[in-house]
Amino acid sequence: MTQRTADAVDLLLGDVPELEELANLSLAQCADLAAQIRAFLVRTIVQTGGHLGANLSSVELTIALHRAFRSPQTRIIWDTGHQSYTHKILTGRAGRFGSLRTREGLSGFPSRSESRHDLLENSHASVGPGWAYGVAVAVERPTVVVVGDGAVIGGVAFEALNAIGYQRAPVIVVVNDNGRSYAPTPSHLTFGEPIDGAATTANPAAFFRSLGFVYHGPVDGHDIRALDAMFAQALNDSLPCVVHVRTQKGSGWPAALADGAKRMHDVTPHAHAGGGSGGMSWSEIAGRVLCEAAAGDPRVHALTAAMSGTVGLDEFKHRFPNRHHDLGIAEQACVAMAAGLASQGRRPFFPVVATFLTRALDQVLNDVALHHLPVVFLLDRAGLTGPDGPSHHGMFDVGMLRAIPGIEIFCPASAEDLQHLVRDLLARDHGPVAIRYPKASPGPAVASGLVRAGRDACLVGYGSTTAFTLTAADILAEQSIDCSVWRLRRTHPIDSALVRHAGTVPLAVTVEEVSAYSGIAPHLAYELHSRQADRYTRVGSHTLPDEFLPHGSRAELLAELEFSAESIVRLVKQLLAFTP
Image (cartoon, rainbow, N blue to C red; front, side, top):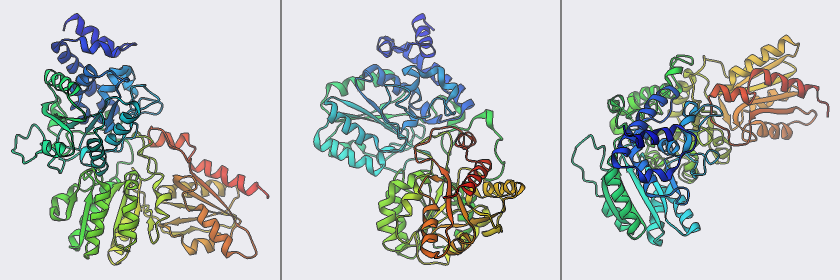
């Protein structure tokens, strides 16, 4: 390695990175730099966990981008944000990668608090073109958006691309086409994986040109010489333009290329392997339950928005390929298709990360609920999700869903709960229904309704909070405070039997892993107020704060937020001691 290249690598791991230096490197030095970054990413991320395969595909692309464009004078927007690790390295954050996705550590996505080179923090896909359009109009100069990992086929991306092309906005759209999101991208706008070598009917050039873009490509996204030339051409040509870059997900790491399911899109930290309960996750349980349901009922269909493996549908896909539907990163289309299926007598289930369903609330409201259709939404990763951070915590969906007429929301506590619930729902002909469960393993079977009786207060829990309420009741009993515990299976509409029971004690406290004010406490208080004539039951709640929460492990965040049995005990004692 030459001294100049050594200096460049030292620069990455040193204190004062200078992006301007990249343009002065020779192609050989750039190749050495890319190899160093790729080795650094593999070595680091297998220890910390994070999005590995996606970032191995974008190393040379990112180097070339920063050679061609001067950030932050030219804004480079990353969509999806999880492909930005090399960007973080080149903008001075290599030394913090040991803390990646840990509490107080480096975010796994672009973060405005980390760097002036980061703009779009939201890790939800397909919003980048709209951001780029807005930025370009505001600053009146070219703006770059890198759209990768299947995000270009999201409906909101199409909408923005149409506007950019029609208005001739100065936007350079870099399509990082590795043929995948997790699984292969279902679209003719992708050429597929470069390693496939299969013939394709894709004609993305015609699509983009029809929208008003100048089209450049496809270009080898691992060839810095070709990328340099293509970006120079884009800068000298009229805008808007598309630079179509073909990359290989997991490039440079044989273990990723051997992973046929998702090219090691994301990996868990080796240092924490074997942690947790060791049982099956809720995602795996949900997939198994849906397979059992589909085996006995040909009406059952399962839909996914590019996350079949993540939400537990791989076995379903294998066993029932004609009833498994992957629409790509398109939650709105998934819900609309589910409505269409249900209107014809089918029973669609849509497992989706809880925070992603909020992108399709209009369809839930007007396509499903308005038509009273039996669509079931399996909301995976409800509550605190951990290292993915604020855009992934599933804590706001409940407050939004409660406003939809006719919807029912369930929170099972055990695998048996979910099995019985799915069986019950298949016998019904109306909906919608949402079933929420956390990024964790199910707990043991627990009876629903009144689990234990008490006279001083009633603790109300469900799903992941059931164990907290039971433990808190035990601690309070040792202090001569007699609490009943009520375990809900359905959280909306509120159980009238719970309201009647809560009216027999002076205090009811709900324990909910949702944002403040979006849980059942306000509804319980309203029902108690409207039903009681001669006494008043105080209602308290123990929830997550009404704010965007940081990244960190689930256990760390629960501890930091004082979400524990001990904090419930303190709240109960405080409320019982209060006299209005």
